[in-house]
Length: 152
Image (cartoon, rainbow, N blue to C red; front, side, top):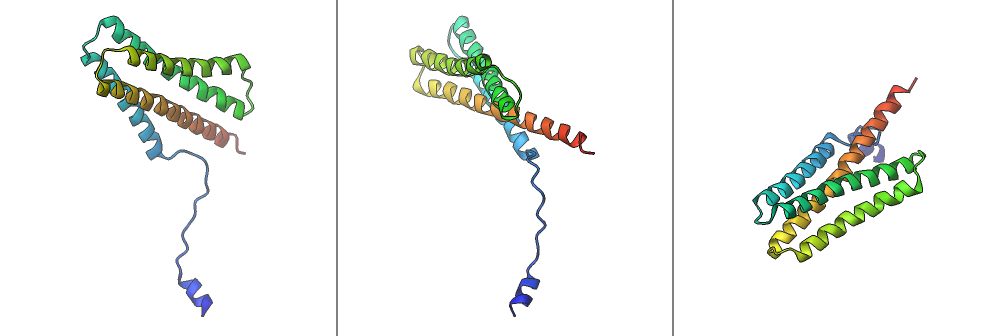
């Protein structure tokens, strides 16, 4: 009786896990990056602040994005056994922390409503996290494509 019950169950095909990010995750990562960056920049464009203050916040966004991509790359390089100097690795982490600290200091001292400060903090955080996800996806896809090319 037990065998007939097992035979009647449908067997689902299980695909082999390749580690390749799904197109939905890749798209969501890119969309999060674009939404975070564009929102942050639109907020700056419409803000009632001096041009040099807008430049400060815009530069922090660019600095932060570059820093987190650099951290992700150096962490991944080390994970894959590629040489990364301790100095570069440390500088990557330092600049990431510095960009976040500079944003916090800027917002703390800014003459903005709390809701505006929260908006900039959250769009900045979304942008940084999404940049890490986009870099990771790009690296995963590149790695898998290169490894498939070398299969004999």
